[in-house]
Length: 118
Image (cartoon, one colour):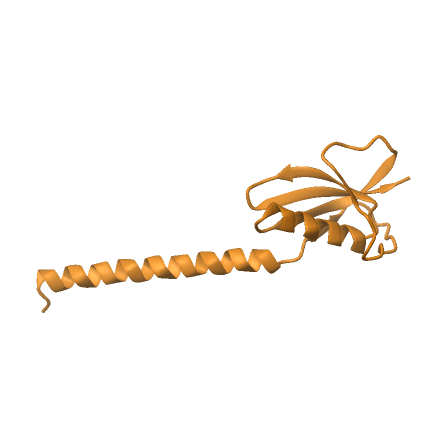
């Protein structure tokens, strides 16, 4: 049988171990979000030719004045936001979008609408 001092030491070690496991899992989750690709949800059935890797994708915070169609929604997770925007524009090129409209910005996620000019 353990004495009270040993029991408290065991409890303290258990708490420290659990805290370390949680910290490691949190770091792994954040790292995985950093490498996760952007997620595309199409709004239409039409497919477009991908844009070249060096193509410029316009980024809007409000809808542009030009006529356009919404291709779909692109979501990216992770930190920093600059990385999320890079993931979104890369996906926009892959699906043949001309531009994106930022729909929502959160601490760890960005959502944009991919558009194509008419």
